[in-house]
Length: 402
Image (cartoon, rainbow, N blue to C red; front, side):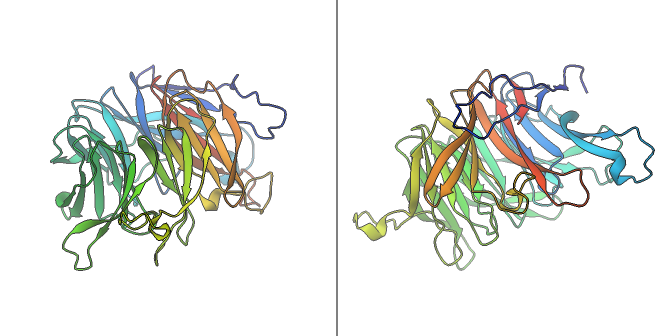
């Protein structure tokens, strides 16, 4: 690890709130190592102590949360270690992409990592077979596949819940779906057209192999595999915002949750999940204008951001408990970042009514490009309570833990 790849901890000077605010966002750590803008943060799905980031410096970095040994005489191994909010860089993946790496995504099993680049390719990395030694400062990956097909910049990639499919999208206005095969082979099974501008983001449903794409054309499209299994098609289009849709996220609940979208227009919109499998976020494709054709918009609210909202993440249902509330479930909660350098947390007061719970106005020195929640278990063994944190990535070249 290079000497400049360090984590520094300090308290944020930007967490002052109006007196009516009861919540604060505190800076816990700053991850320094990338040499240019950081575009994406992604936690390994099965263990929140490993984080992948990517940057305009053409690298992917893997960070691992520090485990601190206590100097005590307790023989209980579990109580002699505790995790912190500090991360260290344990692996740098470089020499694969020739331009900015815009997106990274973990497979559900955590064994594979995909990276999407402005060089029009997607790389697939496989973690080394050897089990990771918790005491070692290294995690090994090998690039096992390079996917080519997009005409130019690839802007997002995402693995399906089943782990058998990978979706990519880009400036060429298309969405590609790749199927994994034995031997680290990937086959393109669908090239989806329908957007009229750049496709900024692809996201899968939390539990179903249903895909959503957000675009510069102000829409969100839903894509499903046809019943005969031979092709994919658009099952609905939602005119989601009045400007570019930068990101979308789904409420992480077992039965299939609502969706949130954010945009250049400064609005946050909450969409009901419809259909038999609760996978629909769009109304009929008909242009008749009838009420039945309207998308299932639950509510929308103007954010505190005074520039475009670039990223959003929904706090997982399983994590909506903390030491302050005991076993009482917390309200639905979103974290968002924007072009105004701020990070903000929004909470649902009641169904359809949201408020800004906390904000850091100058969280970064430049645009906040991505944001992701994670939780850390309490040090008390007798409780299952956890504390919620989120990571933010910025054009200023840093990742911050809040």
